Length: 508
Image (cartoon, rainbow, N blue to C red; front, side, top):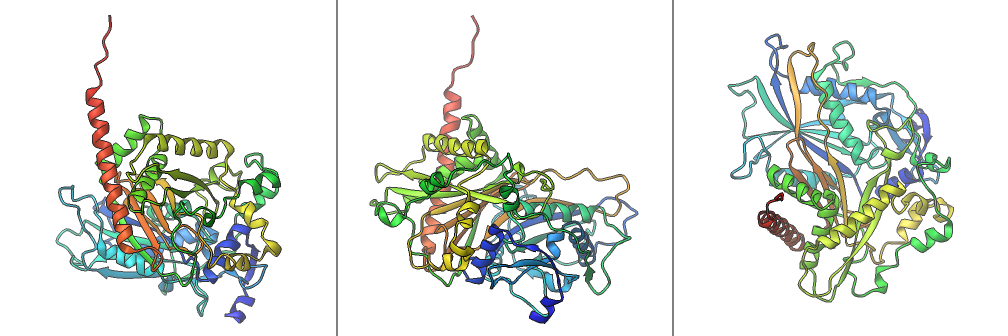
């Protein structure tokens, strides 16, 4: 690998957040992230180019996407030093990074729902769990730190009687040093657009080898911060040190789960709300001036409290935040890179009977509004910049064996935007993303339970629960999920009853 790497062109040094991501993976603390999407395709013209060939269509589409986003042809090197960097891969073998798999019972429809919706698939959960336990590694020849899986249901015939339409699942797994979850949505949108509008003049070679152009990468997050971007306010060192959370070990009433340990084996379970439930949950919060994130995070806190022994009266939940909306050009909403921060909120209960409280949701919303106003979270990058000698691996290793700070982490990447309208010249098949599922590895030096949220174009909110085997019991997570479902159901019922009790407006 070293001889191959030495011949690669150096693009730029890793930023501090990117270094943090590679340090975690090198130490086996955290592996990868994924966004899985359900795609449908429909023949739109009698002049289509024969029956759809998924392999050809997807190889060509992903080759196009690689040409649009230079980070997809970059690989981190020198990660065992204090000066890691991105290098350019002059070619990518799509046969190495794209895998087609047929899985039994992949498409599971929830009872009583429209067949166009996609219910939880235990088979898909098992597959995702398996892939989150596969770290990226340096191969011969070198491959990028991302991979794509095209999944179809083994129980469905490859050639149905109606070849004018079909469906498949595309799972995009990636190393966190090259992309955040917003970037994964950009990837899927780019694939969708490339499928709908194939570029037949610049397709990949028949052998699946894509020759890539050497292009500049977007600057790392800390480049914007070092330049004193007016959109990102800084605080003094004294304020920053004062803002650092105290160790949870000093408070025996705070639950954070067992100590931070390796190795990490990820367990995963998804939860999908119907489009009706998702819409009601969003609207119920909106009536109170609350975002879906503030409502969901407070409900998760109540659900977790229900599963904890009574001596624990406090928990902290971290919430991820995307900074890209406040960064100057060249970063845009369609960029791929790592532009994230995080902030924490503490929740308490006064009795054994933990209940969801709209007051907690309003307090959480105030914290979110504060983040939006300040255009930053708790400044993870600043903490990383203060690490002695910049040795993030030593810093992370020093955390192992000690208490965690957070019980849970919520990452809500939002809803996938609507696709661009197809052009009149578009012939063949129209591809459409419907449902989405966001998932990630468990982490040794982070919250005991990670919850990843996303809403697809089908209107369904899906949650991916990740936890570390041996750190959090499987049955406990199942209880948290059951309690969350109960809280959502009861809250929506109470809200509907309250609406019905409201008197009609009258005029004198």
